[in-house]
Length: 126
Image 1 (cartoon, one colour):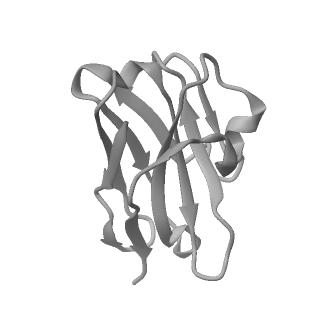
Image 2 (cartoon, one colour):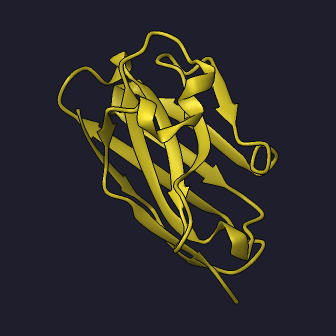
């Protein structure tokens, strides 16, 4: 599967963005999809993940009240709605795919995912 993240940009603190992760190739619904982010000089950080059918989601504690992950398998797309953005949310955001049947705790770690797309830059600044 090939992934492409989009929707990033410059937004003021308190603003919102919706990122998209579009997939092509093998059946999209066969994959758990995760969002990660990486700020300059920092390790890649887990943001959220969603099950194959979209019924199960997991979030990083610091983002669960502000971010929402969803998917539309008919459109081969996963979304990340980000609200109440803070300067600390500035990072390159990546989506990734894994063929596991169910979400596990390990889906919070980048190494579990075998497929990655190019990231999209999110900058939160006034």
